[in-house]
Image (tube, rainbow, N blue to C red; front, side):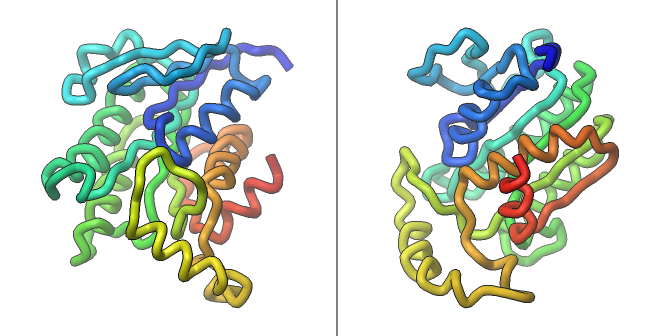
Length: 223
């Protein structure tokens, strides 16, 4: 396979993003992988081009953000962000602005991690933020937009998230009971979400695609 495409990833220090970066670097599909973040990752690879940027001024870096496929794994928690306002900035504003800037640089595909329950009209703050992010990303001029809505994410994180760790301990034993309509609530490995993202990108589809959690493991198995 000819290495003619390049990928851009934001949020590579997170659970899904870390796995996604590893898969991108190993993929023959891409000859270059641009990782953007607030600090450099402790990683050196011949295909990796790391760029330290200020997400509050993404337009400033427009020329450096040209890519064929954009993988957005940005996300935080209200506790880590310190306030609802800061959470909104990371999980909505940064993502929507990245979509706007990369679409203007003629990116073909935008692949973004959202969440189960995302709904711009939701009364639940978290779901509303994710829904508004999805809405605004879809308004950009990409050939394809892929939105991934995982349920509870499993895997080792660099940061400590006590709430998710507790939920994981509760949900893991119940996973085997989740079938039929309950399958979409089954916890999923962060690595499988990353694999699903690369699989979706490889299909060269057009239009808007939203993947519920129960489809992600099936997609991951096809990569």
